[in-house]
Image (cartoon, rainbow, N blue to C red; front, side, top):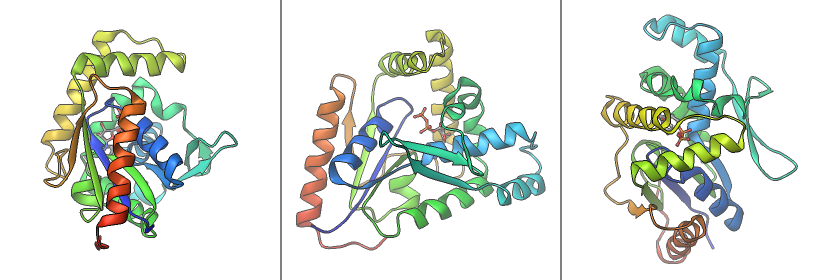
Length: 231
Ligand code: CDP
């Protein structure tokens, strides 16, 4: 079967990463977490006190940033920033609170999109994010757009954070999700929106296994039926 690109977009904490990771594992595809790249840039900017309003500083900082993914012995993809494993750090609330303004900067998006396209050039990838089906790979053979009720999303995120030892109250999480939804959807540069040809899946009342099965079913149909599209 020919290799395709699967783009999974949607709001925070709708199950994008979990679904994308599992779909990639089942298909033997590469999983790329584009959000982790924006989170890594945010970590670097915070560490180096980069002024977001100073385009020269931003450009210079972007030239010094190298992001890569390495699969560990448990088969889980880890994010590296300039050779350092930052997987744990980038999931902290501090990063979540700062990532959307960083991701709204045009120069940041140009740099990340270029890398993402390179990573997907041989196809056989599942990439999740906000603009994968609309901007990064508008020709992706399968586009998924995930949604879920706010409270369900917040509880899922709280559980994830708790598993990593981070206890955050539900109101703080709801406020962060709402703020990011708003910035991500209303920014000028590649705002979060469902591509016209994306399949919408509401994950409020379904399990991860059901989500994964649905995406695999759609993917296999695309692998067999559609002639190759160019990205
Ligand atoms: O894990 P969660 O779903 O909360 O977010 P994420 O996928 O790690 O992405 C973190 C942030 O990065 C988002 O809120 C967006 O501001 C930004 N992002 C983006 O702008 N474009 C992408 N393709 C992926 C993430």
